Length: 164
Figure: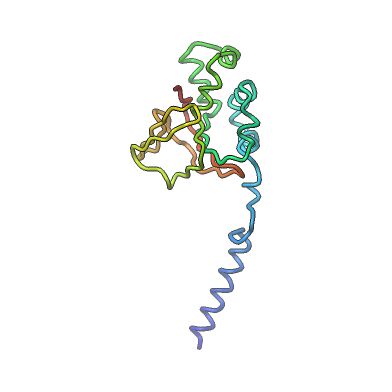
């Protein structure tokens, strides 16, 4: 009898905690925001946002999706600017800016649990990126934070800008 009561109490507590944590909620507040909104709020994707605006891709990444975005941080863009010996303005004026950005977007939602070592994923630039595990990398860029879910896909934060 005591076992049944304890089991019932434990079940009730777990059920309560599930509702509290939003497991049964129809929509998570975090995922009500699209890729662009989540990136803007994060505060460390300012160069990426500026590039998306310049290339006319903001509306695309606010669209229905689903998309997977390998999002380089501002520090990743700083590294690229040093490597190429150019300014942010020069980067944003490049003819191939849109293609570079599309190389960071996969036209489906790919969570970290879906990844396999050596898999190649086709991007919106019509070229593939290669995934490696242990450590998790996209081409030669480390994934520093994975699975930031949005209303229209997922963001994986990377430490280098990918070049097609």
